[in-house]
Length: 610
Image 1 (cartoon, rainbow, N blue to C red):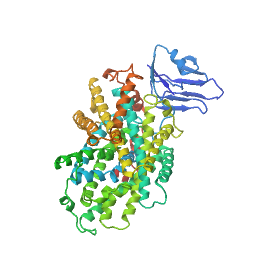
Image 2: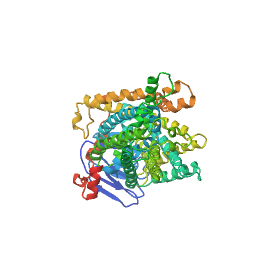
Image 3: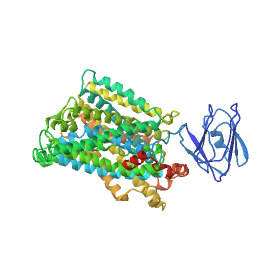
Image 4: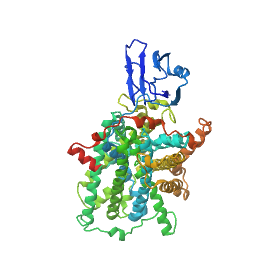
C-alpha cells in the first residue's frame, strides 16, 4: 500500500480517536518509530518527532484527528492530504504495511555473510580455475578479486550504516543514481540470487549422488526445495540462529581442512611429504584456456577465464549491508561485521586454495569429471589422493550442510531485495509481510527460480552448473559495479553539501581513489569475462555469459524511455534525498550500548570470534 507521511513544522501531541465500534482510543505523544496497531482496523505509525500519525490510504472508516487543537474529520489519508493546513508539509513515500523485524545480532549478520559466500563456489567452483590457471594463477585471481570484494564491502558499509534499510544498496541505486538504473540493477541483483538458489538446489542432488543413485536427483531437488522455502517463513531471529549454526559448521570444517592439509603436505598421507611437488611438476601455471597456440598467452587467457569463477565464489560478501535493515543495531553491528568478515573470507579462501594447489595437480583427471561435478571438487580430490579413508564421506556431508546453508541465504537475501524494491522499482505486493515480519511474497517468487535446477534432467551436471554459474556471477558483478557507482555518487553528494565523511557512522577506507580503481576493473571484467565464446561462437554459451548484461541494459533503457520518461537519466545532486530514512534511523531507540556488550562467557567467546 502507498502511504503518505505528513511532516509538521512543530512538535505537538496528537490525539486520535476512532469514530467506529472498536471503542479504542489512542492518546500519545509523537514518539520515535512508534507503531500502534488496532486489531481488525488499521496500522498507525509515528516515525519521528516532526510527524503526525498516518493511516493506510484505503481506510474504510472515519476518525477524528486533532492537529494543533483543531479537530478534522477525514475518511482516508487522501482526503487528509487535500485538507492540509499551510503549516503542514506533505512528503510522499513508500512505507511497507508491516515492517521486517530488527532481530539479527552481530554474530547473525557476520554468519549470514559467511553462509552466503562460503558455499558451492569454494567447494566445487574452484576446480576450473585450478585446471586452467594452475595453483599460482588461481591464488593471484582470488587475491585480486578479494581486493575488489573488500572495496565493495567498504563502499556498501558506508552507505548502509548511514541509511540502514532492508535491501540497502537496492535503495541506494534508485536514490543516488536514477530510478531507471535502480529498476534495472535491482532486478539484476535479485536475479543473481534467484539463479544461485537453483545452483545450490542442483548441487544438493549431486552431493547426495556421491553416496547413492537409488533416488533420482530431481527428487532430492524437490525435497530440499520445499525444506529451504519453508525455512524462510520462520521469524528472522530464528532464521539468523539456524543460519549461524549451519555456517559455523562450515567454518569449523574449513579450519579442520586447513589443519589436515598441513599434515598431508608435511608427510602424514600415503604419498609422503608433498611440499611443492606439484608446483614443480606439472607446474604452477596451469594448462591454459586451450584457445591459442602461444603458451604464455593461452595461460593468461586461462587466468582471465578463472576470474568469473572467483566472482561467483566471492558473491555474497555484500550481505552484511543487505541485512542492515534487520540488524538490531546496524550502526554498531554492520561495521564490525564488514571489517571482520572480509578478513576471514580472505583467510579461508587464500589459505584453502594455497593448500589445495599443493595437494591437487592441475592435470588431475578427476578435475574433468563431467556427469557428477561433485566428484571434481578439489577438496574431495585432495582428501582422496592423500589416502584417508572415510574422510571423503565426512567432508561430503559437510559440503551438503554448506550448500543447504548457502541456499537458505539465497532465498533470504532475494526476498529482502524485493521487499526493499516494493512500491518503487517493484510492485507494492512485495511489501507484504507476515506477522513475524517475513516478506512472504518475495520468498515465494525467489524460491520459484530454484525450479531451474531441473535443467539437470536433460543436460549434464557440469554443463548446467557452468550455465547457471556464469549467469549468476555476471549479475553479481554488475551489481558490484553499481554498488561502487552509488558510493561514488554518494561521496559526490556529500561533498556538494559540505558534509564531511568523518561525521558518518562508518567511513570507507581509502576514499574515492580505491572506489574508482575498483569500478574500472569491475566494468572491464563484465565485458571481457565471456571472451572465449567468440573463439568458437555458440548461441547457448553466449547467452550464458552475457544474458545478465543484456537484461540489465534492456531494463534500464526501456524503463527510462517508458515508465520513467519524465525522470532524469541521472538525479541531480541537489535533488537527491539524503534524509528520508536517515531521519527515522537517527531517532530510533537503539539498544543500549551496555546491552550490546557480552555478559556471559559464551557471549564473550562469540564477540571475540565474530
